[in-house]
Length: 99
Image (cartoon, rainbow, N blue to C red; front, side, top):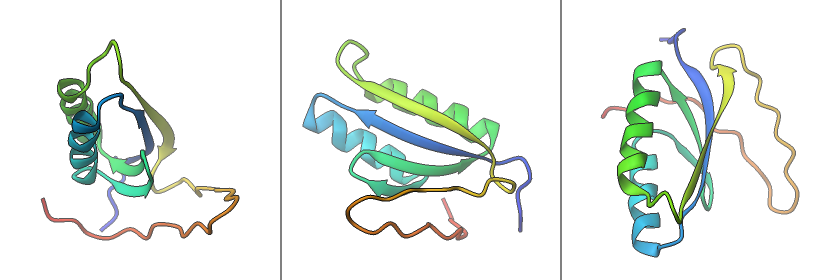
């Protein structure tokens, strides 16, 4: 079932402390698909995007850590173009996720 109110986001982060990095990684696993070390692809409604930002804000230390949430556009209309150098990149297929 297509969810027309979802947008595609790329979330990337630089976390100074390993313990906080692991916590942020666990939060991100609940919201998106892992692309590489500190990069996730997420399909989110406005409500889930706000919830993600609140959860991340609780985990990070603003004076040391940095999180970027890049809004790519409406999830059903985006044809994500990725140029991959080095190791091969496999596009993530949409799957139902029970939370």
